Amino acid sequence: MSVLPIRVLGDPVLREETLPVAEVTDELRQLIDDMFDTMYAASGIGLAAPQVGRTERVCVVEVEGAAYALVNPEMVTADGPRDKTEEGCLSIPDVYGDVLRPSRVVVRALDRDGSPFEVAAEGLLGRCIQHEIDHLHGKLFIDHLSFLKRRAALARWEDEKDQYPGFIRIVKAGKSKSKHPEEEL
Ligand code: K1U
Ligand code: ZN
Image (cartoon, rainbow, N blue to C red):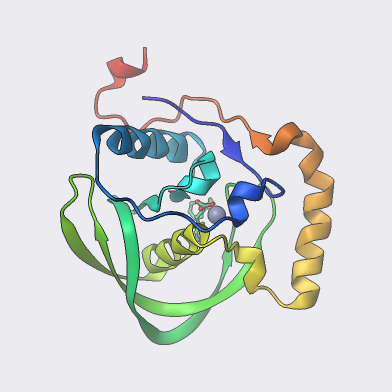
C-alpha cells in the first residue's frame, strides 16, 4: 500500500498516449491498489496512470461509494444532453474550470481480475470517468475550455506551479479508505 507522487502540469507524461494492458498481472494489481491509495490520500474521486508517471491504460474512480478500476477502458456510448460543470484535476491543483460533457456514458473495460465489464454512468461518476479516460489519451480538462478561460486557468497555474519542483506533487498518506486501518500503521 503506497501513496505515489502525483505528476503535475508540465510533466510530459501527462501528454502521452497510454499503452493498452496486455495482461492483468499482480504488478498491475499493485499499481491499481497504489492508485486507489493515492487518490484517497489526495481527496480525489479519480486518478489515471499518467498522473503517477505510468503509461499503462488504467484508471481508478470512486464516486459516492461506487469504486471501479478500469483497465483498457473504451467508451461505448457518450450521449444525453451535455452538462457544464466545474472540474478540477489532481495534476493541476487549485485550478478549476467549467467543462461541457455528455451527461451519460457507457464504458467497457477489464476489472482488477482481468474480467470484462460494462458500466453505465451519469452525473459526477459519468463526468469523472470521462475525465480519467481523457487522461489516458493525454488530454486534460483545460483542453476543453474556451481560449479565454484556458488562458485564465494557465495564468492561475503560473502562480501555483513553483510549489511543485520537478513537476512532482507529494501527497501525505493519512486519508485512507482502507477497511483495515491497522494496515496503515
Ligand atoms: O483525475 C483527476 O485529476 C481527479 C479529479 C477527477 C475529477 C474531479 C472533478 C470532476 C471530474 C473529475 C479529482 O478528483 S479533483 C478533486 C475534485 O475536484 C473533487 C473531489 C470530490 C468531489 C468532486 C470533485
Ligand atoms: Zn485530472
